[in-house]
Image 1 (cartoon, one colour):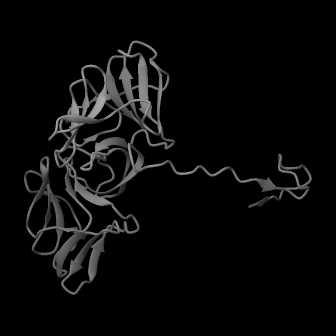
Image 2 (cartoon, helix red, strand yellow):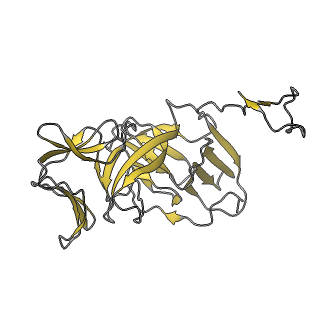
Image 3 (cartoon, helix red, strand yellow):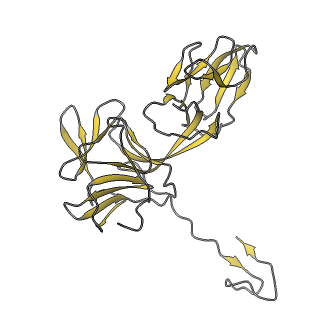
Length: 283
């Protein structure tokens, strides 16, 4: 087994979801579907990883050496056919004796997920929790049973937003509450009877509760993160999440790597700090 292979992985079980979580393995015959149902990412019986346009039934992409920002190396060890999320995406192909993988430089092994989008793009995402109602509960990005509130989406008053055995409710008294299956409150924002009438996931990444007069009575303090969204998880955590693309089959390029800055010392050297001095200028 290759040295870079993770010590522990879980099987992918959410067939038909749009995202594949970190450190999971997808096997032949399993697939992802775009949220609009138009595109399917399928690991085929012949070990090819392909994207199909479901209306036409035609393959529009295949994982091979023609893909920009990817690489192919020889397969080492007795590994069966599968796809792995492990910082990058790795396709283990024993039929051709190859490992095809995406190529990025980001250190996000436990956070990266594979996503098939509504436009047919295949994207590797670094998914971070910016804020959580209970940081002791596990962050479960991309979970099939999480309920998501996207940017610019407001909650309806007194309507439950369920996830597993928990539900998030913006109540008529203005409080935002997470309830368990027995309707015991496990978390609340403490905004009852403060005149709050609107709870919104803003496009700047902040989740805010407002009065009719537009006065904010509570927020998650996550502004400055455009594109972030909120989710209620099946373990009862209410979380603000941000996805950062770290690879995509089109429309993406790696960020340029800045060279290390040179430090100049009083004797005009750039080597180790000279013994006679302890000052250097960093430009």
